[in-house]
Image 1: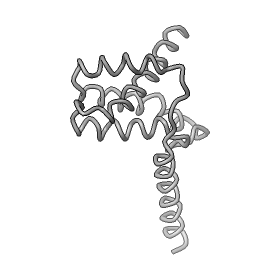
Image 2: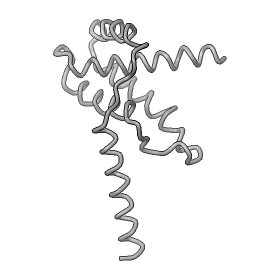
Image 3: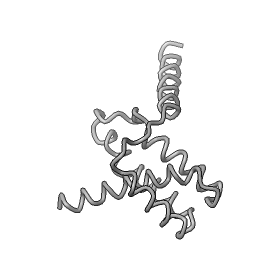
Image 4: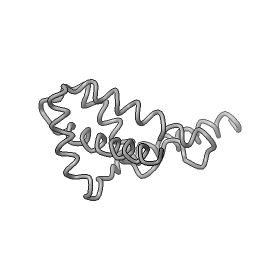
Length: 124
């Protein structure tokens, strides 16, 4: 069982890298690029939208939402292009993964907006 999970997780890691490469590929249609940007930004962000210490919900985004986003983005990319991107991504798996500072800043901004709204609701 753990062997299958490791293979699945490595496949997800490869697909995130392939989507990151797809953002720069002119053969990828813009709707696929837009969704890939959201998925890759979230996957490479050092900050989770839902922190992992929140029971159940903290792991929900990593186990369900992220793989579904990856799957949908992959379906929007032509199969031949995706196969080529996966090959290029597999060659880069052992390198340090890129980080998305912009995605981290967006997530921090969302949490600050939520905190401000909650403060206004409670004390306003």
